[in-house]
Length: 261
Image (tube, rainbow, N blue to C red; front, side, top):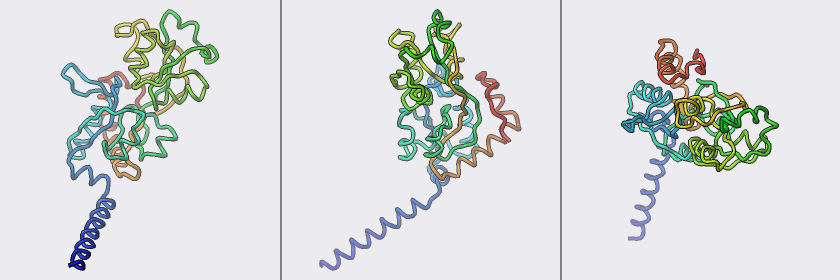
């Protein structure tokens, strides 16, 4: 009887090992195709990813992600994530890619299989408009308290400059901190600043002054994923046929778009 039990246990262990080996050998692309959905990790970040009046995700990144998923022959699902945990979300297969105006930093490139850059960006300083003339140089920022999204390029550049920064959950929260007066300033993406602050927005009293760096956006997949190369090919095709430019014009980000070739 004991021999039979041992034999059954060994057989089960072999089955589990084979199953695990099969899962490990299956390509990341095939994993997405088999489940029939590309799960995209995002944050609320106009004009890249944000909700319309019907609660649907739109924006430059959301629209391009939807088109790419259609090219793959799968559905798309958008999942709002904690940006500071984006690598954990990706490696844990909670999401299949990070597609949210993501700066191609050294840390991101080391942790993810990234697409070619598709858009230019910068980190800019946000202050109340009536104080903007006081903060036109990096040196003038020394005594300010900043808010920036945790895990973002904005937080990183503030830390690099040795400035006082409080991390918040999202870039939109950083704007709220400045509007409420609980932070002197914020650092956010220039593309978001163009869409979210100034005349005609909810933050008419805020403006941006100086840029602290220049950077590029890319999409991150799991390390080794073939989907990054597939996306590169798709972006070249979409740029050539004009559809990528049309989407950029819809969200007024065409001047930042990088030619795909």
